[in-house]
Image (cartoon, rainbow, N blue to C red; front, side, top):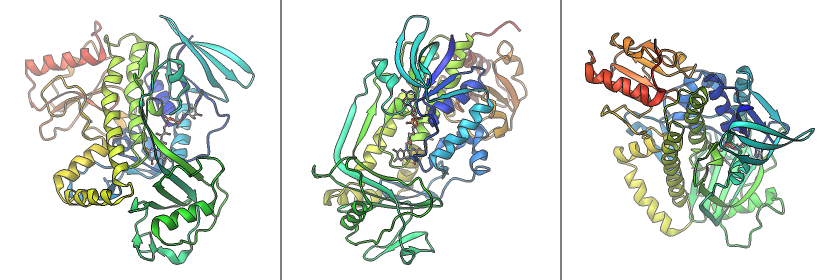
Amino acid sequence: MEDVVIAGAGPNGLMLACELALAGIRPLVLERLPEPTTENRANGLVGQVVRLLDRRGLHERLAGPIGPPVPAFVFGGMRLDLTLTDPNPLHILGVPQRRVEAMLNERAAELGVEVRRGHELTGLTQDADAVTLEVAGPDGPYRLRTRYHVGADGGRSVTRKLAGIDFPGVTEDRTISISANATVPAEFADPGSGGLRVPGHGVIPPFFHYRTETGLFVYAPFPAGTLLSTMEQADGEEPGDEPPMTLDDLRASIERVLGFALPVEPPSGDGPHLLRRLRGRNTRLAAKFREGRVLLVGDAAHVHSAIGGPGLNLGLQDAAGLGWKLAATLHGWAPAGLLDTYERERRPVAERVVMHTQAQAVLVAPGRDVTALRELFGELLQLPGTVQHIADLMSGADVRYEAATGHPLDGRWTPDVVPAELTRTARPLLVDSTGSLGDELRGWSDRVDLVPGTAQEGVTALLIRPDGYVAWATGSAAPDDADRKALRAALERWFGDPVDA
Ligand SMILES: Cc1cc2nc3c(=O)[nH]c(=O)nc-3n(C[C@H](O)[C@H](O)[C@H](O)COP(=O)(O)OP(=O)(O)OC[C@H]3O[C@@H](n4cnc5c(N)ncnc54)[C@H](O)[C@@H]3O)c2cc1C
């Protein structure tokens, strides 16, 4: 019997596998594709997930040490001046998804995780004790029994369907989007800004959702090749994914959006080259993230527009949120109901992403009425408070899980009070700058590590969950009985009963 089987070796399945392995559980990962995909989706990670990767030592593998937050970003195709924020919460890591996946794959292998490629989940039933999975492997079908099964098998999740979990939401089919790797002649480049000089438009900044009243245009000059994208209003006549689109379709679409015939040439290099047309957009949220012994993470639990790049901020943090709770349940020390807090915490975060991606999609839509909305929004974006609110929303810095104490950090992402090296093991930590709380850990020292810390304004000690959120905090230099009682309650609430020391 397996402890955990994960369907899907995409970024979220692999991240969950790493988190489980760090917590002492060896999951088995089933992946339908025989080889890692060459398709690229995300071009970067946005928000708290960058700090999560840093704390696991994974940022370094992708791009060296974490840098400062970015000075500007985009919301609904409008510039967010992040110098107006204090603190600025928005970190970005500009790496393609396939590199993130390759890195997680390598990390999972180091941690001893088995990834079976070419093995497709085809059936699932569960009873009180276990889940039985049907798998189609390269040598034929076989069965597996597992104590828990996690669907990380993407937006069309077979796990979700087999578990009978609904996927309500909306399918908007008013827009048609085109994305393609292509070459733009050098005379259009604006070396100073890295943008594109287009007659009638001045310089279109790189990676910017440039909107006109007839559509949207994005110029994304990646080191591996330039990606051009458009989005237009669909009139019902356009083909969907078939017949395959051509560069002529892209040229025609750019001309409709910009009113200028940009002489787009085929891409150079070996590829793979993207050439994709998508009709509409799905925004859906699974009716439940858990059905008995079956759980969902990432796109299997939620799909939404990719605008602003929030997908992996959401999915990889789902994985970090679920990993330690599932491991604790399997180790037998999880307090009652711990696994259900996964959905209780992550659903509201997914709902916020659904909300802001839908709002952004409206802001970049064609039409004069939208132009008026953008004018007003542009005025609001001069106000530091508005920019702070949106930056906190996009980064996830505004996430606050249920707090048991009145301390402002309780339930929030942990500030950088300990060196990232100490969080690589994904163990719960009691960070104590008072030097007086060690005794309170008696009974939990097998599960929670004590580390010295430096006091910061308003914080002298913190209990940090493996996913990076604060479970308890105090600002007292000499914690009293009430502080200690609250600390023990938090230890019990998240890490179970004390054992005799
Ligand atoms: C065009 C585009 C641009 C995007 N840009 C960004 C961005 O810039 N930033 C960002 O954060 N996010 C972005 N996203 C979103 C991001 O790509 C997704 O959120 C992410 O891929 C979800 O990861 P996942 O692991 O949940 O699912 P997936 O990546 O879909 O992986 C699921 C895996 O499960 C496997 N699988 C499916 N069915 C089975 C089965 N029955 N048995 C076994 N295996 C199975 C699949 O082969 C696949 O490998 C973008 C998405 C798109 C489409």
